[in-house]
Length: 65
Image 1 (tube, one colour):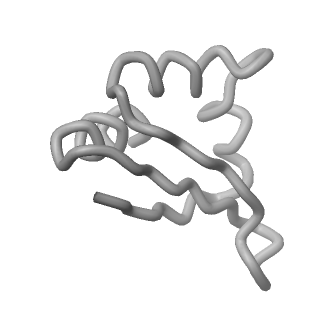
Image 2 (cartoon, one colour):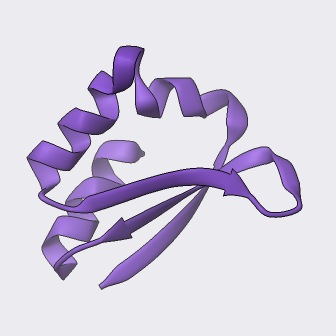
């Protein structure tokens, strides 16, 4: 399963964390693969792509929210 989330840029730091600590926690806890990139045409958002099983993706989404 692959899901994408559009996140306001001002939350990017909270999601990634210091030296990537928060996103590493989300990855290890959920087991999902997360990719963070700038949203095309939207300078005030980032796109988080989440890949994994349905439960892994749901866990990652919950942790991000």
